Length: 128
Image (cartoon, rainbow, N blue to C red; front, side, top):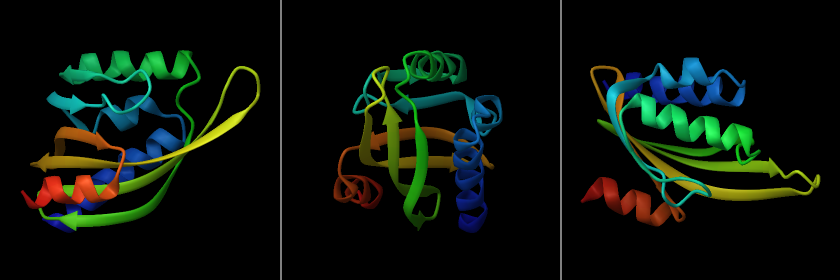
């Protein structure tokens, strides 16, 4: 099952990078719990609709950028991804940030996600 989970996560990240937010959000369970508080403009959300609101805010504020995957860790029902994102602000300056995200999956859908500034903290969270 874990290879399938990695495939789901990589598919949603590919969709996100391609700018297809609806396809990316379709990978999330309708009741998904998301803790995105460590990202600029992020917060905790409950449900796909609230997650969609945060995504729309990022897109309208140019806080979302091109995402690339540095590493993927298969942890069974959880997938840890080390991401790098390049964000171009309204003045044209590009800022790069790295972070890790844990995706918890059940029956092929993401049921929770949590963001960490440090990969070590994300890996610690899945081993707890």
